[in-house]
Amino acid sequence: MSLVTRDLKHIWHPCSQMKDYETFSPLEVIKAQGCYLTLADGRKIIDVISSWWCKSFGHNHPYLTQALKQQLEKFEHVILANTTNHTIVALSETLAKLQPGLDKVMYASDGSCAVEIAMKMSLHSRVITGQTEQKYFAALKNGYHGETLATLSVSDLGLYKAPYQSACLNNITFIDVPYVSGPNDPLWHDSAMHWPSTQAQLDHIKHQLTAILVEPIAQGAGGMLVYSADFLKRLAHWCKTHDIHLIADEIMTGLGRTGHPLACQHAGITPDFICLSKGLTGGYLPMSAVLTSNNIYQLFYDDYETGKAFMHSHTHSGNALAAAVALATQELLNAPGFYQEIQEKGQYMYQLLKNIAEQTGKLKNLRNIGMIAAADLVVPNNDKTRWGYLIYQQAIQHGALLRPLGNSLYWLPPLTITKAELKKIASITALAIETIL
Image (cartoon, rainbow, N blue to C red; front, side, top):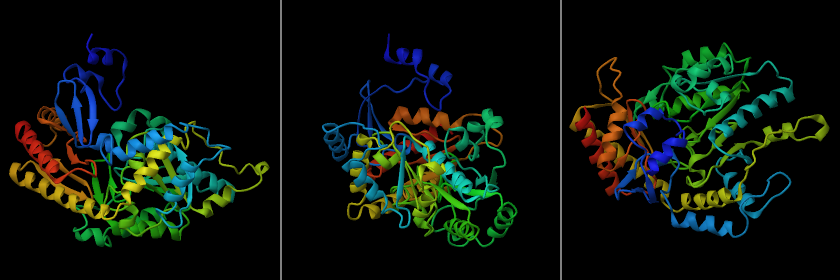
């Protein structure tokens, strides 16, 4: 019995229509190194999507692997409640420096859990302060914040959410977003024409809101959409003015992906909560973190009998192996000149995508921020053909793992990828588009 046959007998793959595997089997990976996946048949495939946006330094990076092995020789995991260790303290001290003012860290296991922690902290803080009428959330249209019922509630993607709508949180407000092609778009710097309608929408519900959730600057699952930094700045100012918490979901955007340590820095803002995951451990192990302020922290700090404690936990909160790799990842990110390299490679990616658009005539709505480049496929209106899926299949045949979001094609490769490898991705992408469209 083949490995794929054994796989499909038992494994329910994530975010997949399992029937698709009858005609296009899962890729049998035997090794991963750098930007490449080596398959059982000997082919090498470029991981263009950083294995769901988490492999910031590629696969099997020697420095990260060494950090993992060194921690493994000490201990692998000890309950974080009632204990501490040098690794988790050093990581926390490092993360506390990412955004001045947010120096308290709570750990969880994945991005959805981090966002849910921030939502719970916001709601719980209102209970403590007696602001119980502030119990609803707002979020951005086309946003995505996770797969739990609470995080699905504040997400605006029907394909993921529709079957569970009846169990989702009520009274979620979704805000229109002014999209841009990137930092050179005039709307990036000035969203004054767009803001009055947003402000009117928010002013109408401000007395009921506890928090607004955003994926800062770039929305991932919604199609790798980029929006105005000025809009985010105005939104953050409105939140501060009205004592509404701002939750920045930096699960995908944080830790270098947009060319800054945090995407919030494009707008010069300090939210009340920042959620990190994916690239936090370089994609080695599951881990997430919620950063918040001492002001929030102090609301919960009291005698146990008051019932103010935040009684939330995950079995693997602060897992030592994950923490060791996360700390090593921060050291790599902070290497001199690394963020400049990200910005330069990001500009090169955008130029390559523009070249494909001109060459094929099959891409529109190009956008880019840091090392994210995306565009929409030019396809017939109301056509139900899964063009993105067909391009995925074609690209695999030529050596690249693309995974379009519907008909939105994007590149989100490891930050360490070379320009030669980016050029190869562009060639394969163009060939796949020309073959299918």
